[in-house]
Length: 123
Length: 408
Image (cartoon, rainbow over all chains, first blue to last red; front, side, top):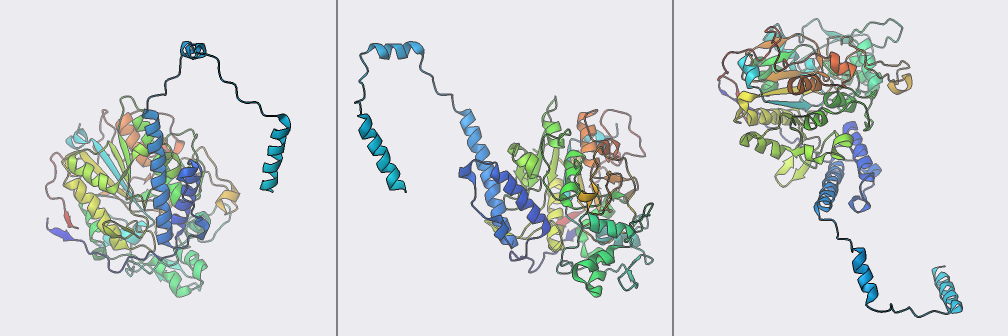
């Protein structure tokens, strides 16, 4: 069978096209997914202000990449060996090294004064 | 076991967006009268009462703006012509009226009846004529994208008839979860175009199973290296955007995205499979999620009710919906070198047939599955059992060597 030629579209690209209902729904779904990510993976993009397909595409890309990054980070953490816990006997040995230095005691009146000053600065 | 089924190892589904059967393939009746497309007798009344005939005047872009309404109430009007009385009969006479509601422009509303001439769609029409075209593949719901795509992933929309999120913890697992959790384990992947297009299957998969996702570049690579999973679901590009490769034009064919960009994408998927070492072992189903509000003449049939009911409030029609009726007919084509040229399938299918077929083929008896999926017909006969030759579409004794090639 002969090779069938497939024509290419001309002037089809238009990232300024208004967002269609499907992309709006996709953004809402991604927004819901984004809200479940750790805060450091949030995009900080206000989706109600997105009007064009190009803006929608930018948001869709960022959230999709952040979802993947969040999963990758979780997988990396899962793969790391768990931190070693100090055994009780070691803690006891440290305790045997000598007396623990006591923290200098602050006079109760002075401590109260400090707290008041801090509060005062805040307001 | 027929050799086509015996060799089958991979099933690929490409789901496009929002075009009806008559709009895309209706012209083919003139070439093959077995294909149930457009005839001169087909028309819809406009709001003046004049009959508007279906005409081959569809354009690649810029014609269906605004996007024709295809939410539940609009599709109800399109199918029933505005008749809301008890015992009403579907007549497919409300498409022009429905489109008029959006712009109040009689002339513009008539464009909903336009369809593509065969030579405008060299990829889709060639594949339809060369392999198996389905005369009766319907959207699962007379409604929009998300709930219809849910049927392709879960065999149900869990009672939804809208674009809202689907939530996890439902009784029916996605086809992907079924496959990867099976014993023996199967493989499945959902390939979206790129991260800027992403997927429409967000809630249940992207959050929980990112390993199931791959890009279209990965699909191409998996095809050429012979590493396709057992089941692949391919999504087109849903938006215009720039990438490192240059301008990426939306290829989903959703109005008002360019039809030719979708043709190129379909050809690219087909070419990737045809040039893959897995070509003898793979079938490709090309199907559209729903009709997008565009005219089709075939009345959607009733079906087994799902176990969910959408309330009158949810449907927006004042009537509840028991998922006991299919949506409007969409283009669907099954491709394999084991399918005889010019096959026309007249059995009834909908998107619940996708997980239904994949499950039966790879997993055999599996439960739980939704009532809609359980009762949906399968387009590939299950592995292992006795094969009914009248139902088996991969029926050739030897593989075809005359399959088309596209210059992409």
